[in-house]
Length: 164
Length: 167
Image 1 (cartoon, rainbow over the protein chains, first blue to last red):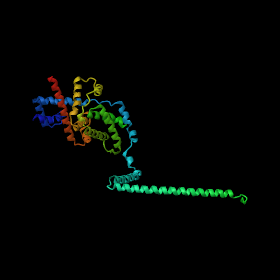
Image 2: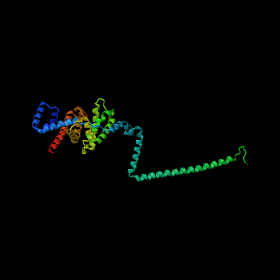
Image 3: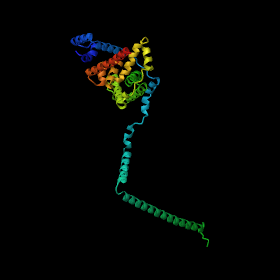
Image 4: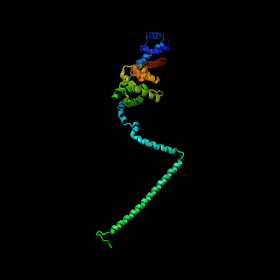
């Protein structure tokens, strides 16, 4: 057997997991090959050191941090909040607004849209002005009626007689 | 309860895999956060320790792939391990300490899947069957991977001894 083949079997040999034929072949090779024998010795040393490798003590504050994880998670803002059914109308409205805005921004007829919007704004503004003027004249006529009523009331004698 | 039972084990597994004390703290916290998220999915028919170690292994491997620890140096064989070793084995010799130093550094030379298998079997004391379940691999593949890892670590020790003789 070559050294490469022995290397493949060496760990199983150290664990006594080889069949009798392979075991004997490895034994014969080890007797004749000091390199492979040295490698077996190193393997046993490594195994022994690994098995006695010490466990490190975690830092004292780590455990406190770990205890706090469930509470931290309870107050954490999660994506599931966004999936509430009550928010679906708001998302739908936002999608419509976003679609219209995108259509407006990227539309080739943007100038015409602006003109149409301006026209509608001016129409609305003039209608508001008219309404305001009408409201003003109505207030004036109501004021006149109120003055007339007051004058008439002053002329009325509580005993049914007029000043004349 | 889970923190009491598993924090030390998960911290050590993270430390042995990542090689950095500070990194191990962050990884342990991440793993416990993942545990809290995943607890509702735990199948009571499974061994909890194996299930939890599988979750930890997945996180460590994912982080390894994301951050490429192999580019970083491992912590030196520092006071954390030395003081733990002194408490466990007060009569240890200098040779034993040197061997541990070499193995600690040698872990970084192993590919991540081989390193994880060695850590679970040799340092965490799991059986081949448990390691196979954690790594979701056949037992034969796990044995072969661990044996190759042991051999690689043995070569590191042998080379160090040869270099020491040459000096």
